[in-house]
Image 1 (tube, rainbow, N blue to C red):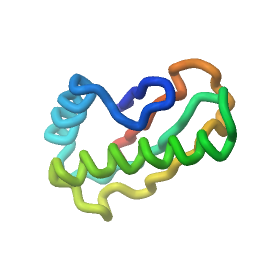
Image 2: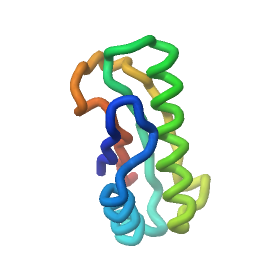
Image 3: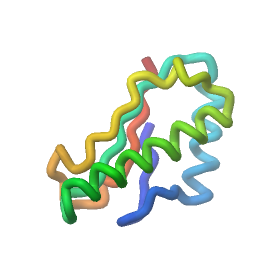
Length: 97
């Protein structure tokens, strides 16, 4: 499952938030792994911090939806390590374990 973000933003839209809640309800009680990313343009440090903020925002939303911290591991932020220039990289990818 993927949460998309606007350029230079760590906030997801209301629609993305509603979809995340529905996802959380569907997979309640499962273990999830999360990977947060940023697109390539910009400073490496800034992109890393941006992906960390995105990760924290999604983790917080999942915890508010009932997930325990230990069910959200591993949760990592990789900045722009994949080197993607497009909006495709402005995301947090959630995998059900």
